[in-house]
Image: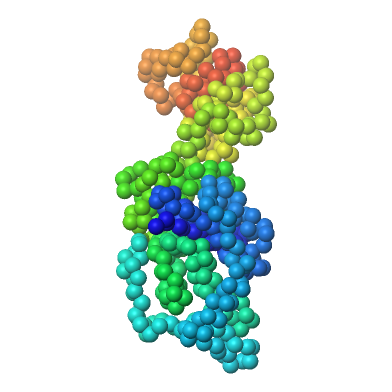
Length: 436
Ligand code: GLU
């Protein structure tokens, strides 16, 4: 049997990461089993499912690399089939008509739940049951003649020959109804796998109020599609070892429904940020340069007295977690007009001995014949040792003098990239400004 999974979103203009996580699990399972991954757009709410909303959805899938194996099925095109099936259920005695509320708004069609306990084996949660007494008949066609979600969802899964329905566990109650519908329609019941809820730090469903919640938000902030895919894949699944940053092929190879978790998955945006940094670190230098282009274009023009952009980017790449950090981190390399971080100046520069240290360092640098990283590094180390001052008294004033900042990449390569002349100029400028 070829496994067929699907993503069945209702487009609203924003794609919540919880929905996308379901899409990713369906995609991974299909790819792991050599099956097929399908898309069904549940677009029966015409007010929300605008062409723009559908476009947003398709773009989000494209950005995350969720390719589909067949043309998408648009639920709104299937209304006749849904209504015909409702008529059949009426004819077979599985449904009945009723004027709901008796308010003369016309009759709706109601599905008759079988009077038996419901049981199914969830691929993730195990055996799930519901007592007959706790089930209720439900509307499948409204009095205005439109089919209800339950009917449309089940009929379209039958139409698309879906074998595994993988979706959020907020659908478990629906699944009891859906299984009854499959049986009444004489269709094979697919397997169900209900994914654990995605929660915030307080254990409540993760929402917009907790931080970014839509795929588009993350894209705009400069997260990589690969990062978000990897991160969401781990919300409720683990490869069974401690791997976290994984290639797509590794995830496909390791993905099993049986290794999905049934307990809620907590969103940790700091971890997502860390992971983005790992993906950026792993980029080829030319990919990183491409990403950085827009961020540095305003100031990183190549001129004779300005440092080599490639060298600056190579130094920054391992430290960057979002593209928006590149500009602020790179600016001081290219402009003498950098600002001094007030706090850094107060805490680390305006201290007993700082300016003497800077003068000494300037003298030492002055005497260096070459200013490559290793030479500068050795000179700094030798000074720290001979003066007995310690790194904590030497490095911060130098760093603040040349960059205005308290932290940044390793100091020796920073100095070497800036070049001797600039470094001496900046040290002098700092002494003149603060040391008087
Ligand atoms: N349109 C439904 C949703 O977005 C489909 C659920 C499903 O069957 O996957 O929640």
